[in-house]
Image (cartoon, rainbow, N blue to C red; front, side, top):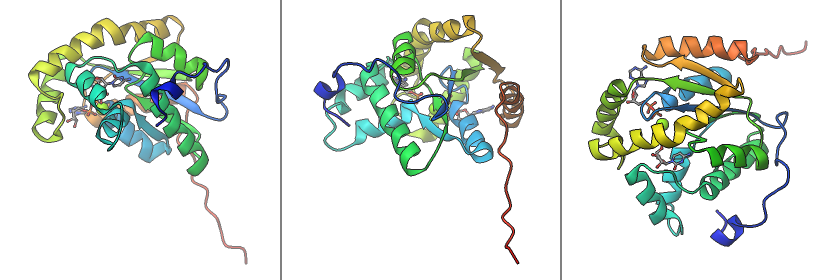
Amino acid sequence: MPSPSQLHTPKRTSPLYTPTDATVIFVLGGPGAGKGTQCAKLVSEYGFKHLSAGDLLREEQDRPGSEFGEMIKTYIKEGTIVPMEVTIQLLENAMSMAIEKEKKKMFLIDGFPRKLDQATTFEATVVPSLFTLFLHCPEDILLQRLLNRGKTSGRADDNADSITKRFRTFIETSMPVVDYYEKNGKVERVQATGTVDEVFATIKERLKERGVEVPKLTFITPSS
Ligand code: ADP
Ligand code: C5P
Ligand code: MG
């Protein structure tokens, strides 16, 4: 992770990658909507690289010597949005690694962009997105799921107090991102209240409509 001074180097005037280098689908939804759960299923069927902004922030928070650790911890506990420079740099680093080392081209970026400035800056300096998958779920169900997850997740924000704050941030700060993309016809809204498999079946249909198909297996037959 670069130092804060490096994070503030002059912005690129064009994106680092083209949509041909990297196809990016943003996955949004309230806390507990099932973003991580559905991304895991998409990874195993489609071979996407899954990058969760929250996971990357938690990793950076716990990295010995990180100069952002304490700051990230406070934002996560309070359910507020970490300054975009940090999150975008973490995502860019992880994408570059996956492109170079794993030869990945298809990305699910989960829990990002959570704020309009993250959306516009990421698309202008890293890569434009293909579309946003939005998992829609009412708050009472989100609350049940998060409290249940909190029994085993060990997360500092899966408690009633942080959850209330995260819901507020979601409505006030993150929903405007969904509205912005929706106005541009770039959102696939999926009802996320069904079972995991039901939600996944709907997601697969929507991906197909957007031209994203399960890759065909190629069998290599030994030459005689
Ligand atoms: P997010 O990444 O959006 O915060 P998760 O994928 O971590 O959400 O899911 C939150 C919790 O809800 C987890 O405990 C998960 O097992 C559970 N969960 C996810 N999808 C469903 C679903 N469709 N029905 C019931 N529980 C679900
Ligand atoms: O997506 P997840 O629930 O794992 O995010 C946990 C927390 O990480 C958020 O509540 C927020 O504090 C922080 N976060 C952020 N910016 C993002 C994604 C997550 O600040 N794009
Ligand atoms: Mg998650």
